[in-house]
Amino acid sequence: MYQIKSKVAFMRATALLVTMLFFVFSQNGWGETEGVKPIEVVASGTFDQTVDKVKKLVAKEGMMVMGEINQGKMLSMTGLELNGITFLIGNPTVGNKLLSADPAAGLVVPIRLYVFESKEGKTIISYYKPSELLAQYHNPKIDMIGKKLDEKLDKLTSMSAK
Image 1: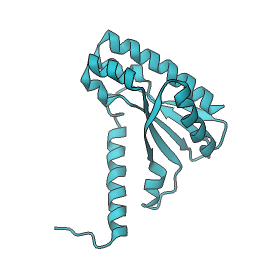
Image 2 (image 1 turned 120 degrees about the vertical axis):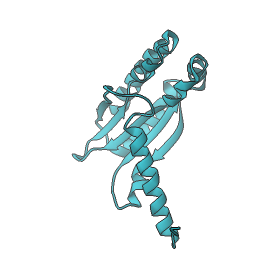
Image 3 (image 1 turned 180 degrees about the vertical axis):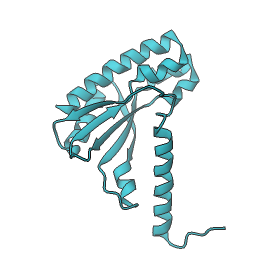
Image 4 (image 1 turned 45 degrees about the horizontal axis):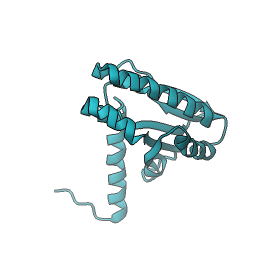
């Protein structure tokens, strides 16, 4: 059996495993995304300014940050320098409606919103349209909620990008 002999090696191995899992799951957006393209909004501010705006504006749109994954910080343990944070955002009342209609919709919500700095130095806010991810459940109630979530994300990202 393989043993990890130092704490630093263990942290690096853990970071690499977590990064690989994120990569695998992000390839299909935690749900079926064949043919679904991410929305990318270029922000006018710096990475840090945009992250701060996103955090502040989520609440104004009636949502909350339910989780935050600093992928840049994790990947720095592997030697990659990257500014990238994934936010898990949602609203428990909306989640209740979606998961009551179909518990499998928990694969799509909370919504993932990724803020990152491109290779060209631009700050990008990226997400998949909830309506497109939720369409796989073939449920009119879920479809209606997905369209409302699209509107909220469009407003949130355009305001955060200013």
